[in-house]
Image (tube, rainbow, N blue to C red):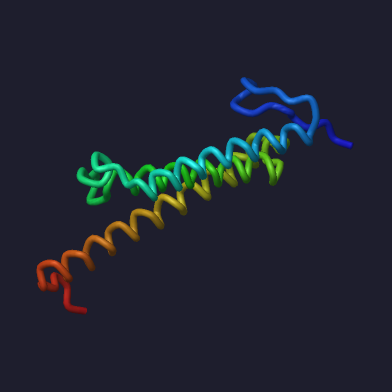
Length: 126
């Protein structure tokens, strides 16, 4: 059987077995999910009142934490850490590019639709 890397956070946390590592990654993902749910329930005023690139800070936090969770699920549970570095780059960079492109398109189109509803003004008539 292959010898798997039993560390996360670039070696800061090391585990003695695969079972303890799975529990460690599970706890990490649970903490990130707990933070997302807590922010979603409380919706702090300082995160919802300010915007960056037409999106509230709270939404940027959700996008970032979701990408972190997706990365760790791919890295640990799909065993990308055990593959060649070129294969890792190919998979991760492609996914990051496509996700960033999708977020960009959704933000642009969502902002346009919001402007149409608020201002009742259609900029482009197809």
